[in-house]
Length: 374
Image 1 (cartoon, rainbow, N blue to C red):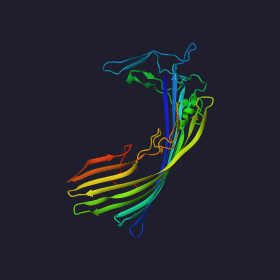
Image 2: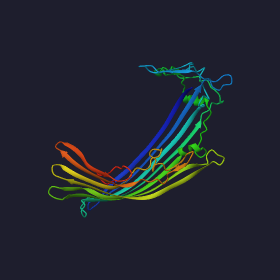
Image 3: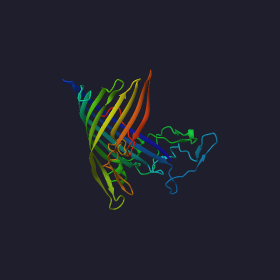
Image 4: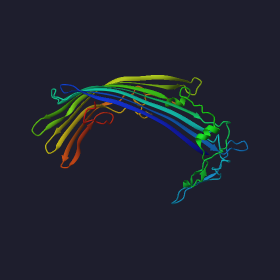
């Protein structure tokens, strides 16, 4: 059997933003930020097969081959027939059918609005203070369609304009027939009738859409004080409040491949609030040394789904022969993180020495110790 493929991908990306700062009296600055991005990917995958038609009522003609392992040389693979001969090898219902096509499409859209107020002056024990709010709305949609590729008459077709045969001599396997897949689809095959998730149980996991809306508010104060003649305290203290509203719409197959089969569209989701305080301190000592300490409540990564970049992980339905698996209510795990670092700046060089660390919680998390994320 000879198999030729064609892969077509069409990507489009649109992104833009606007940011402006307004300087006010009394050391106040207002910052506004608007951003938008949209990315789409449309793919078409074609797999076309060719084989040797059977005789005497046989659907296929089988061949004998030999595979030989050789010491200090490439293995060899030889067959009894010439698979580069277009009069012998024909397009059509080979061992794995005439062919198959997939047509996945994905769209990812993100809109964000942010406003900050910054006061560059002392307030209580802080050298500077800032607070703000951020809103983001992200949607990601995927549609997956697949279907068989069949020749016009359902039988075998001779390739009348083959390409130069593919050379497999690097594996001592001779040459095989090659053809222009796009031209073959136009000249020798029927229009493709794609299967969709609303009628095909094994396709329900390939069509879904998710939406995630996140509100974030924060307050932060920056520190910079001489505690003594030899110690200066720098750092910041802050807190974030995150409100997340996420949902997913997907198909679910009930009683698949039975007379009672039903494929229904379902929407599920959840909302939750996380309060994330963070304290980051740096004690600047003599001789260019510093002791840094950070403690924060952080959220771990969301559960990963099979679709990378999908907000909230696998927020969709997936049919399984033995169970229904759904996680539209998945949420990240929160835990406390503590880190201690001793830093020494040498003359002309910079070094970093981690003197100790403590991680509490069920998952490994990254500590944002330099500045609270705002």
